[in-house]
Length: 333
Image (cartoon, rainbow, N blue to C red; front, side, top):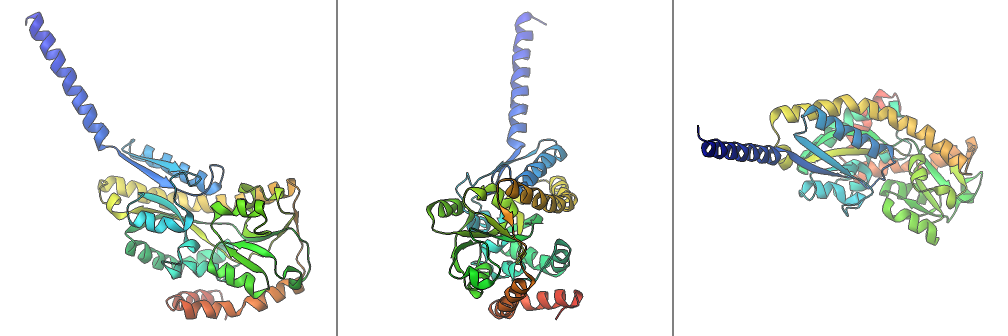
């Protein structure tokens, strides 16, 4: 073989290798996963762990990047639609903020319907199949879902009766919470998380209904003094994928992602409970006080908000079957 011939074949071999490499690169799936929560939030950390596991399980063929802190420009209430319309292939969707499109997704936040993570698991036996249908209707698929820990009222004042909360302007995340605080005489302001800290800083609100985790995210000790462990509502983040994007994956890739979602979800639930404990400590270390709510005050709280369960069922008739099945299993009426 002549020197010229060898050089020509070497050049052709290099070109073929480059072409093969280009083909491999084109075959790689690169997605973004949008979330409004900051990097330090446990939901964001869960998502990052999930995408790393997906990359490893697919040999790098499915490469997902978590876009935290709302950096893609989507607010929490927009995530269901954003995935539905293919504006982003994946998102961490807060269910209670989607009730404008899908009222059923507010079921968990009916005041005092759920009292613990174990009770939430029972509710999900009946509710999750409905969420799966809602996701499919909105051109997406649920990969995993994880609850926020128990909810608190974070306030500037310390009181021992509901009357002491009258007319306090408080940020709420959804209509159920809006109705709940209205029922006890407070003045709710319905705003997404991204606008909460500016509202506190400007004095537009003087309290927030949210988890201890969000309290740490927002450094509430800079604005507020007291934490009331009311445990009034629950909610979940639901990581979903657009069905058109999902359909472009190979079957083995789909199977790997589904299995990872099922495997990691229980661990992510445990992370939620730990995040609550850790965050409460961080709030108190920052100078906030956890209020021991008098029994009479909590009894009054429950009594005033009790009618909201039937009001929700009336507003969202599809929820009745789910709620009744859950209450029957819990031996509650």
